[in-house]
Image (cartoon, rainbow, N blue to C red):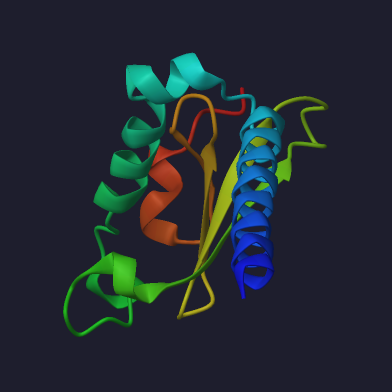
Length: 123
């Protein structure tokens, strides 16, 4: 019985170590280090993403008005068009999407007409 408990504890410790290493690797892939976590950079990005709401009522299919409920997926992708950096693509229930710069949290792409004036100028 004692051996079984030690085996379970060993498995739990291994899972914690592997999970921590995976989280560390994922954050490095995003270009974020420990100093970014402590400085609140991740919280700033999450706040910007969660606070963005479309100005047109027809852009969101949510009855509650909470855009977080409409999010289907979020994915960090390499910016191959620019050749460097990463962006976060948020896809919504209505099929639309918004793209945010991972470093600054700024809106850099959108399928919504109401967002087109908020996008950076291509000139």
